[in-house]
Amino acid sequence: MNPERVRRTQDTFSIGDLAREFDITTRSIRFYEDQGLLKPERRGQTRIYHQKDRVRLKLILRGKRLGFTLAETKTLFDMYDRDGSSTNQLQIMLELIENKKAALHQQLDDIQVVLHELTAVEAGCRAELEEKSKPVTDGLAPEQTPEAS
Image: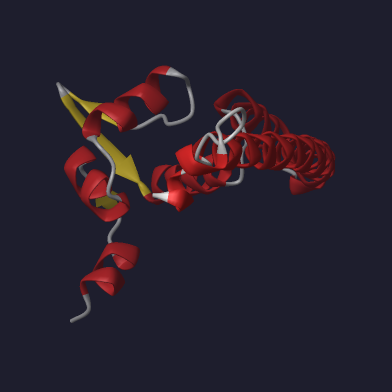
């Protein structure tokens, strides 16, 4: 049987199961728990994670890849937990996406400006280097130039 399929049909997970599945450390998972993003069941010292925790972890990691902060992700989770409706959550998510896209476009513009400046500085450096690597012939009599030798 496919291990991925087993994971999806499994009801509970250990912290190690999730760490292996998502290729992250158990410390990261504990950090997300400390931040209130994950709320595993406790049995003594053991954390028992359910499908909801697994889905949340997947969303946390996807959000990070898309540039969302953990605070933004927590806001979405808290909103969903409060009213159980995804309508408000989706509206907030759309606002976050718009803001993130605007920030990325600004970063892209800033990067273009810096690239243009770097290209100009690079051209200046290359021209100066080329000038400095030419043999010195100014003030020398023709018989003293390297070509005359």
